[in-house]
Structure formats: C-alpha cells, structure tokens
Image (cartoon, rainbow, N blue to C red):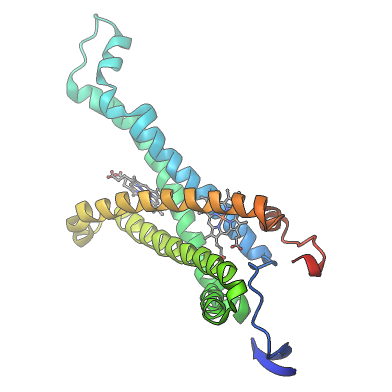
Length: 237
Ligand code: HEM
Ligand code: HEM
C-alpha cells in the first residue's frame, strides 16, 4: 500500500508495509565526499607529524648524534643540543597546528552540513534510521541491519573523538596565552594524547571494514565515496 510520508518538508510516496532498505547510503553528496577525503588527509597528516616528532626524528634523543656530527672539536652542552632539537621540532609543530586549524575548520563545516543537509542525509537521522531498521528487521535481514548499525556507531564514535581532538587541540594552541587554559594544559594534553590512540583504532577498523565490505558484498562502495555515483542497476543495490 502506498501512502504519503513527510520528508525534509516535502511529501514522498513510500511503501508503508516494507521497512527502509538495509543497504548502506548509496549517494554520497559532493560536500560529504570533499569533507571525507580532506578530513582523512588532514588526520593522516596529523598522525604523520607525530610519527616524525616522536619516532623518526625524536629530537629529545638526538643530542649524542648532534655531538657526533659536530666532531670532537666542538663541545655541545645539553642545553645547546636541546635548543637545536627545539628548532627542528618547532617546525613540525607549526605544521601540526596549521593542519589542526584546518581540521577544526572541516569540523565546523561538518557541523554546518548537519544543519543544512536534507533531513534524511544528516548523520543523526541516518543513525536513528539504522537503529530503527535493526529493531524492526525480520530475522532474515537482522544480520545486515546489525552490520549497518554497527558501522554507524563507529562513525558516531569517530565524530566524538574528532570533536575531543579539535577542542583539546585548540585549547593547547592557546594554552600559553590564556592563563586558565595554561593551568589545564597538562590534563588537556593527556586527553589529546589518549584520544589519538582511539582515532588510530577507528582508522584500522574503518579502513579494514570498508575494504572488506567492498570485496565481499558491497562492490563499488569505495568508488562511490570517490565519485558519488552508484553504477549498479537498482535491482543490484
Ligand atoms: C583517516 C582516515 C579516514 C577517516 C577519518 C574516515 C572517516 C569516515 C567517516 C567519519 C565516515 C562516515 C561518514 C558518514 O556516514 O557520516 C566514513 C565513511 C566512509 N569511508 Fe572513510 N575515513 C577514512 C579513510 C577512508 C579510506 C582510506 C577509505 C577507502 C579505502 C574510506 C572509505 C569510506 C567509505 C566507502 C565510507 C562510506 C561507508 C558507509 O556508507 O557506511 N575511508 N569515513
Ligand atoms: C587526529 C588529529 C590529531 C592528532 C592525532 C594529534 C596528536 C597530538 C599529539 C600526540 C600531541 C602531543 C601531546 C604531548 O606532547 O603529550 C599533540 C600536541 C598538540 N596538538 Fe594535536 N593532534 C591532533 C589534532 C590537533 C588539532 C585539531 C589541533 C588544533 C589546532 C592540535 C593542536 C596541538 C597542539 C597545539 C599541541 C601541543 C604542541 C606543543 O606541545 O607545542 N592537534 N597532538
């Protein structure tokens, strides 16, 4: 039976006897795709800055190497070698802060997209729809509905992690200039640091999950996040 259903202020006809489809979103808007890849690049860039600072260059442990490079004719004090290390690390931190501010801009863009996107495309609405599908799905579709809901829950977790990263990152950026932020700096750094591991865990699960879904039962999922188009015929979706 067909009946009109309100959606985004307009009326569409939908079947009242069937549930909304279990399959993942198939049309990724341009805004969402730009957001996704820019955000992925910036977060990977942020992780790279940390990899360089703490592992590859590790200026704190480079003192003996500085001394070796200068040779026995020059005696480098601990303070001088720290100052040299500081010059290198400061350059990388500037990149971290620059990309961090861009990430904060994309976070703001995402928040605006949530307000401006048609109701059905907003993340909150898609999460609620996935939860509803899972609750109402007949036994044959239960596993698929659970899978879609779990994927959406990982996205919800990611949006929480990135919000924490942006808020704590901005606090650290201005910690030296604002006295009350300065007094919180140590705890804020710990939260910022810890959330990085949650973000790394998210990326491992997410990339593993989408590659697996693309290979197994949702062919073309990754290309759709690039091109936005679903090349399959409707009966294959
Ligand atoms: C730092 C790296 C990445 C981050 C932070 C990230 C983040 C996200 C987020 C938050 C979503 C959910 C969007 C939404 O529905 O609101 C998403 C979806 C998606 N991502 Fe990523 N992503 C990353 C890397 C990748 C990579 C490398 C690929 C491809 C191999 C990829 C492919 C996809 C696809 C296909 C979807 C849509 C899945 C679906 O509709 O359920 N992502 N990503
Ligand atoms: C996924 C994104 C991010 C990751 C993985 C990340 C990771 C880190 C890590 C591990 C630290 C070192 C903390 C410590 O020394 O204990 C750090 C410091 C910092 N982060 Fe981020 N961060 C991210 C996003 C941001 C954002 C959005 C900003 C905002 C601008 C930001 C600004 C800073 C600042 C100012 C510091 C302190 C730098 C210093 O000690 O001189 N970060 N970040």
